Image (cartoon, rainbow, N blue to C red; front, side, top):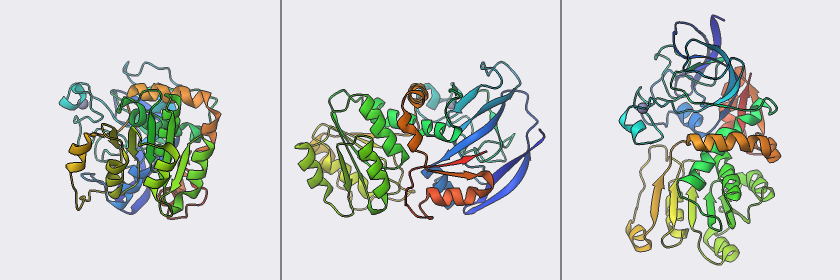
Length: 357
Ligand SMILES: [Zn+2]
């Protein structure tokens, strides 16, 4: 194949169909994309809200596909293997990689799929295209052929949920976890905390999250709260009788969630901030509560490779994951797919969105 169909974000809010050559590389390989999940990251790129992003670019970082071609021994899996591709490419030698951070400074602005500009050769760095360049430093996780491709995209959310709810706050069995935001990653935090032995899990959303909150209840949340209508602090106190050990902010673009988290977490508890705020500042920030309550605040970005291995297993063993990808669109309808992800086409029955090939 010499030319591949791709959807390129030429500038914010301008996603255009284009064709790019899939050639000119001597290392790594090519992935035939089967499905790409969309999340807040693509919505932020589309809106122009993501700090430092350079356009034009091909969005899409939650990629599932098959290895179609390899050019050297950097890819140890055979051609035809179905894989999840970790969004973050890790060079292994920059300061960020050496420190084990979920970011790599080897390429600018971000050495990550869905975030590298199309001007960076060979140009195919995003999931909204028929082919993805497999960088020699890309990290691939083989997955079963039995799962539908669109369902498999949810493994990316699962991996993030495990890193944010379990790994980073070092969650122990028997702990109580409150999740702010019932989006795909919030629901993934629920599944991860559940499997890690959380004793109580609460999850809060807003008016438009009714279907996601109902799904959270079916998945086993002990408390679901529509915080537009009900007092969250009261509901948590009523259900739990004490304060949660861990609060995770997985809201979308809601700076206030940080105050809610600091307010509701127990003294000595952990607050995981996994949502960016569209580059907006926090007004009226009073830090004394952090000192007074001796809270540990953790900034969370991306998912670890261990979490991806957990997610690949979870995908094969938990049939409930089948219900978590509610909307599918073909590549040509990527504009609508991003709008659906942003909730612009309505929130009814919206759980998560994938583009399929
Ligand atoms: Zn690096």
